[in-house]
Image (cartoon, rainbow, N blue to C red; front, side, top):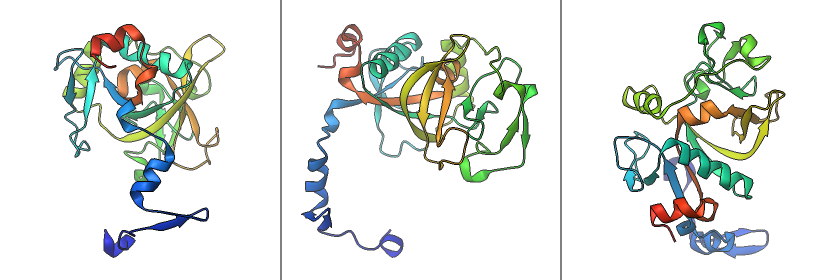
Length: 226
């Protein structure tokens, strides 16, 4: 790391003020003890935390395990009460098209044609994808707890990417989507944002991190979070 980035400075200057890495972290005002990770799988007990068995979880981070409906309840409650979410998800699905500004789980994936390759963005997630599913709403799969687990166990759901869920919106049919801020530039249709359908989030979320005050009180009690 030193060869590529240089030695870690003991102190640095930012906006006319000197900091050490530790003093700068304190100046941001974030207490990381206030943030928790949430997930939903059946191979561990609900309402307990466990280390997610993911290749990228090199720090052995733990997530609280809840049923699928409560995972979504937590996410929605947090977003609607002014808390955003750090979202870890699979982006290698055919229905994930950053260029089209959508992440969906259509019932018929065969309508989606992938043109070209884009390994820069994880398994062609940024490649050109053509389908009427990206032009108008299509019927999506009904996601169950069992589907989530099978995807995880079969390595169909992988820990590809981290993004930022900032809001909720509905389309012309009243269908819910999550507004997601990505880090792949602003060259897509939505200036770097895209819309992830509720089925996509249910199916392909590996976990998300939120402020603990975004969790509904009854679920917070079940988890033993104060």
